[in-house]
Length: 114
Image (cartoon, rainbow, N blue to C red):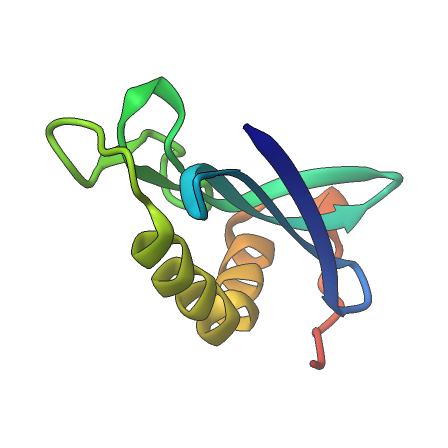
């Protein structure tokens, strides 16, 4: 199984990490993590992954508790990875702004621009 890691910076102070395992041409495990970089550290904003054996997402500006998206795991997450990659690409700005509004004061209030 080969792991791949891709990092994008859609705006200053924002990072999206894509980590996925490929086996037999299929994505078998993945994690997509959106973070805000502030004060020399990364703060999680949103994550969707297949850790713990099944697909779930976490919206850290709310509770951070996992929202389970399936009852049992799969062996092919290619379609889910591609779908959530688009979903994060479409919503990262809104989510990071929500995180800054609901976060503590050390996050700063600088508006983000893509």
